Amino acid sequence: MELSFVMVERPLDEIDFAIVAVLAQDARRSNKSLAHDVGLSQSSCLQRVRRLWDRGVLKGTYSVVAPEALGIGVQAMVAVRLVRHVREDVQSFRDHVLGCPEVVACHHLAGSVDFLLHVVARDPDHLRDIAMDAFTSRPEVANVETSLLFESVEKRMLPDYIGLGVTP
Image (cartoon, rainbow, N blue to C red; front, side, top):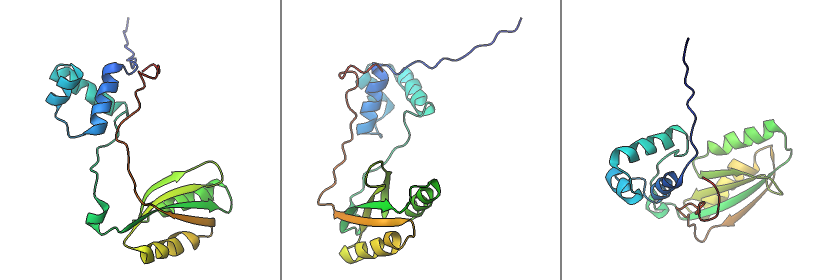
C-alpha cells in the first residue's frame, strides 16, 4: 500500500496579514524586529515570510526614489484611447509603452480610456516629445490626453481586511 500526501494551503490568518502590513511599510525590517511586532518566534516568523513569498502574496521589495534627485522635473498621467479594442492592438501598445523608459506605470483599464500611463520627464518640452513620439504617432492610438501631476503620494499600507470583516 502506497501512501501519498497532499499539501493543503491554509488560508491567510491574522498573523499573516500582520506580517504583510508591516513589510508593506518597511520591507527592510529585520526578521527579529518583525517577529517581535507580530508576536512570533524568529524561526516561525521566517517560515511564514518564506511561505508568503512562495505563495506569491509577497512579490517584491522596492525603494522609493526622489524623482527630482534623478533630474525628473515633471510627471504626468497620460490617458490613451485606442482605435480598436482587439487583442493584438492592446498587446502591441502595452508592449511598446513598457519599453519606454519614461513610462513608470501602465494601467490597462475598462471604460472610456484604455490605458492610463504614469510618465516622467525632465521638463515640459521633454514631456511633449514623449507624447508626440511615443504615443500619438502609434497607429493603435485614437486619442491622448495628458494631465500634469502636481503631487504623487502612494499609501504604503493595506486596508484592514480583518477589521472590515473579510475572512483571511
